[in-house]
Image 1 (cartoon, rainbow, N blue to C red):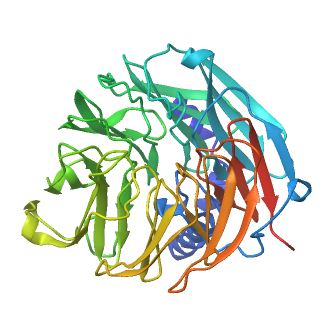
Image 2 (image 1 turned 180 degrees about the vertical axis):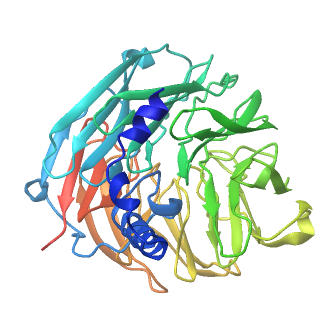
Length: 428
């Protein structure tokens, strides 16, 4: 019923029926390109790459430079999801007994709506939160993910804050008490969730309009994975959904039906950060918070069970555990939890430079107009130059703790701390 009402309310239907097929195709491609460029609709933005071409954002600033700053109730480590003038956030109150979804006006910081959901508390890692999954949007709906020990719930809203549907994809086994850290993503008309934990796990595709489960891929993960999937699309090729976990290692699924295409079952430890595609390769990192991390990079086109001889390059030194690596141009940037930053050749893994910026980092680096931004757990924003020469461009203080990755959209950067959401505006 919600689906039918939603379709009937779609603006512009009567206009589209009067347009020629060719013009429709041109308009769809044009507006899709605009949407990709302007909106930050998932964790780490368009395609999960963490890259924005936005110009004019500062590399240093003070409190007086913010366009606006608002207090955020509760605590959550999710990043902002931005579509047009809507900024979506999740949070949690009362030790997870209440989960919060909120929408904020990007231009003013005005709270547009909030929704509080009754939930239950559970054990989690001290550095995790009860609202660590970043919302995702398709431009007319926003999707959030919350878990307890009993369920993994995906909930959809329209942009006015009306709940549209809620789907439980299955129990979240929290045996080792880490909690959940993955985020939903949207691909075409499907919401995809990788619920990978200590028990029987699932990667599921849900209909964006109804929440109906279109496909399920049952997995045996063994250790909770906090990684968020990424998708690779190429003309004339089967689309690929890449995941990383202990049971499958680095794996590829068809996002149309959930079919396993191939897997490189090479991992002995958990995966926390997300897979990265660069230089014709897909790579993922496994390990723990201390030593013992390992990266494996394989060609994106594989079949069946992928053995160690198919690994193009691997590494065990200066690897991040929580922050997801950044691929930009021909290089990879590893921003380690301990403040060590490395630049490597994406195709070969050859080291270009390694430097220490100091601090501890749980947020992932993003690249804005060729400059790389990240935020330490103490709220220090560090900006460095991309390329073959290491250079610190600026440092600024938020003045509070931070675990969340920045978002960039519509000429603005959004930074989330433990207590506030900040907005910086690009120079005109």
